[in-house]
Length: 154
Image 1 (cartoon, rainbow, N blue to C red):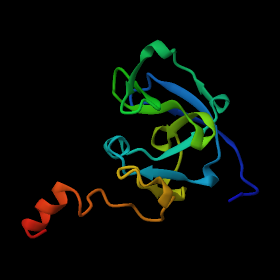
Image 2: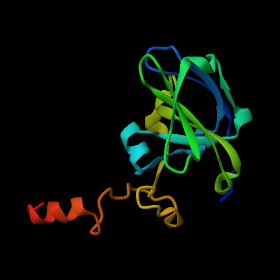
Image 3: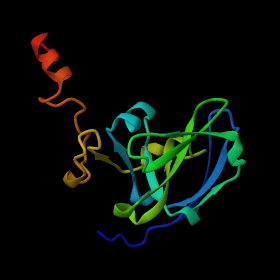
Image 4: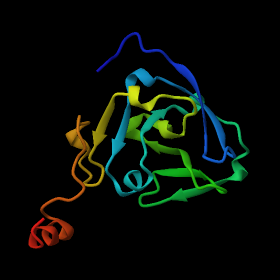
C-alpha cells in the first residue's frame, strides 16, 4: 500500500533521565505498531522503522547499554543510568535490509494519541497475518498458561 502526501518530520527523542538523546526523520502519518512478542510486550514499545541514514544518535554510543536476544536480528540500545530502551538496530531482508527501530514513547514533546496504531502477532511468529487493528492475544489454546486459566474457571 502506497501513501501519498506523507510528511517526514525531524523528531527528537531521549531516555527518561535525558542521558541518551537522538534525532530521527520519521513519518508519523504512517502510524506506529505494537507487537505482542515477549520483548515488545515487556518494553511497551510503540514502534516505527526507518533507514539508518534517517537516524542520528546524539549521545556517544559508549553511554548506552545493549541487549540482543534470540536469532540476533537486532540489538536494543538503552540508557545505562535509567534503563529506558530508546532504539534498536538490525538487518532483516523482509523490511528492506538495515534498519533502525525507535519507540514513539521515547520521542520528546510528541502526542502519541494522534498515531494510528497497528498490531503484529510476533509472539506466535504469525507475521503472515499482517497488521491488525486490534491487539493479537498473548495466550492461545495451545499454551499451558491458557489451559491452566481455563481449569481455574478464567
